[in-house]
Length: 143
Ligand SMILES: [Zn+2]
Image (tube, rainbow, N blue to C red; front, top):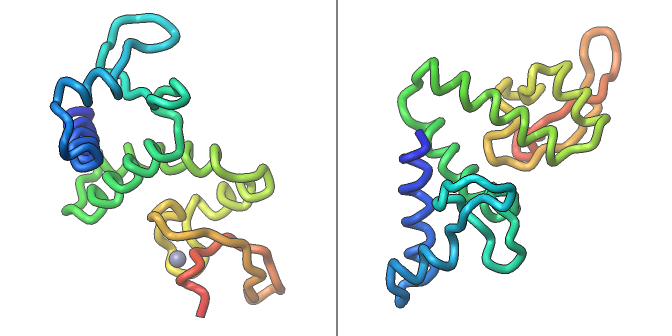
């Protein structure tokens, strides 16, 4: 898994800097962890020195994640991604939305797919037999 991510990220970096040597890329993007330890392959933002937390990195991961999700389903992987989805979702959303998401099992109220499939998520009042309820849905799922 980590190797797969690493491969994707390095490919992305090579595309970002087509004219730079691989050594230059490594020096610029990979550092030892800020909190200590010696994994010199910690992906680090060259501008802010933030490690693996910057949005663009998450986007890279997200991209990889979607590619993974589209590959034939592997139950062990699915569990891994589901856990990760929840973490990402909770990091990006307000408490209200987190509560809604938990109630919905982190799935879109319309298509029942995971909320974190790369689509924009919004709150909609949906009519459920007993009345109107605020639900989280993917924007493209709203007709
Ligand atoms: Zn949906």
